[in-house]
Amino acid sequence: RTMHGPFTVCQTEELLPSVPAEKRRCRRRADLIWRFTTLLIWLLHIFLIFLLVQGVRDARSDRTLIPILFIGWQFVHLTTSVLGDFWRFCIWGEVRYRRKTRLVGELGPAVDIIVVSCGEEIDIILDTLRAACAQDYPTFRVLLSDDGNDDRLEQAVYALRKVAPCELLYYRRPGEPCSKKGTKAGNMNAALEYLDSISSDRTEFCAFLDCDMIVERDFLRACLGHLVQEPTAGVAIVPQSYYNLPLNDPLYQSMYIHNWQDQMERDTLDSVWETGPGVVFRRQAVIDIGGFNEWVLMEDIIAGMLLNGVGWQTIYCYEQLQWGLVPDTLAGHIAQRRKWTVGTVRGAQIARFGFSKRKLAQLSWRQRVVQVWYCISPYVMATQRTLLPLLFLALAGAKDRLIDVHDPQRLNAMLLTALSIGVCYRIQLIATGYHSSYRMARRRVEGSIWLSPYLVLTIVKELLPKGLAGMPIRFIPTGRLDSDLLERDQKLRAPLWRRLTVMILQQGLWYHLGIGTVAASIVYTNLITAWRQPSRSATCGEMWSRTLAPGVDWLIYFDIVAPLYYAFAPPSVSARRDLLEKSTCGDMETYYPKCGARVEQWNWYCLLRELPSVAASATCVWMYAQFCAR
Image (cartoon, rainbow, N blue to C red; front, side, top):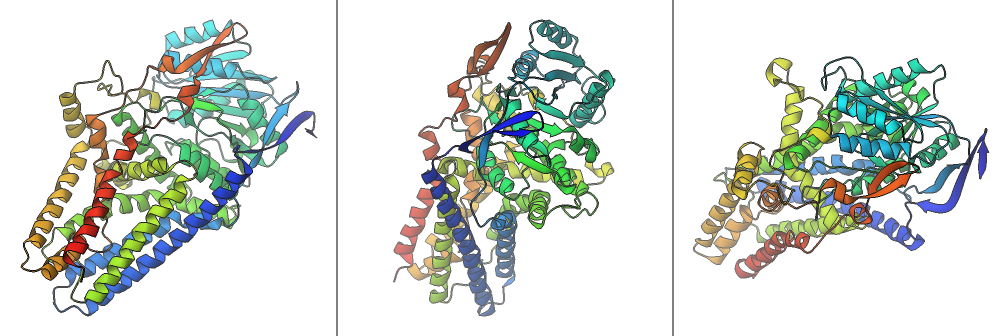
């Protein structure tokens, strides 16, 4: 225990995340394996490009345009791979673990808990307010700042106030419901101004919760323990966890890898992201960055960047202390991720891609590397996940060959290099999956690939002049991202035919269906052409110069059509109230997620998604042995 002024902070010997010492050593080895295989992939890719250049230089044909474009395609692919992961190489030692910290005793700095809402379901908001009011903390008050101007909600808050064990306030700022200036960030700024106006003494700390986030009772004690102990800390952040994730998480809505791998690595570099709800700010830190930016659409991560830029620390609390809801429809999930992308694009402009001298003057070089990566990440992912697959289909559909195969030794060298890249990539994925699981790591890759086309359109729309872009993307709270298909409700979901019609024609799955059809047509046509060649050597040359050219990854197109699997067989999720268990705090009822809802569930079906890669690998080996082996 240590004293910090009148406050007592207790730190245990337990390190968080709570894992045995042996598992920490295994994680260290997995990180080293990941770094080694990543570097090896890049070097092998460079060698493959070198072999392709040699093939063009020694080509017997004058028709070298397509092979040259294919080399350019490979170079861009390598460049995006490097840009996607280079920031992780700033860490060469062990990632940071933090000791479990609590503010203890009957004294604590006053805290305002602000819950922001904008038209969400009243029951969801009330469950959040109950959990906020049930904090095991000496001095705090709770404010609901309602941009939805909901009279029924206001009455419900006044009724809850009678049994709440703390001061509970309701506030709505002037303006039309759900269309007020600055959206969520404006609501947060207005809430702070309102609290300052009703009391003479400004509280030193303020916490923000989304209205669908249920916090554990020791949320404030955990966060304030870090903030009191670290006077240079501007914000304490807890990971976002969810209690309504479906079986096998088919759309990858989990934040698990983000929370327990990406954020740990950023925290090691002193640049952890401030990821929205479940945060406690020092009020002076909010003042130093001029409040929350109301233009950026997603105020959270840019707020953390600006805090680092003016010298404040961002502290990550490695405990699952809040539980929220993911969108329960495909349309809602896509809309949420598009909103996040707009926030990233606008945040990059505010930060001048990490190089703003005025706003980010006090960043360390490692912090700046992370911020630069964040700013360029939408463009890197758009190129790698959408533009490159489209460009490859154009190259593969051309009449000319992708590579020259007249030199058998060079062809074998290319094939061996491509095989080595594939093996290293699988090892890299397994190393990534050590922190969570292979299936979760694999699902994250799949999710980023199929979602990318929607984000590309979002980026283009955001960068176009207003006259060409049309209606700007508006901030819509996650709780209002509805779809009448109700595909995860086993009783109310739309029939299969209507579900497919709406998702394909109105929600964008026509793109996935079209790309999958084109890819399958090109593979089929090229393989039939190769099969009809007069000799085994001619068949071998035709296959490996077109469809199965070294450096080609057709498996990405299985990931692109993943939403079609979801449309055919969406998972079922229980009603929200059935995922919660009732508790009490004094005279007030509270609801917290059941133990089973706190753990992500997987079954044998996730293994079926690996069958395409196994079948494709086996087919390539058989075809090489059948037609190319000497």
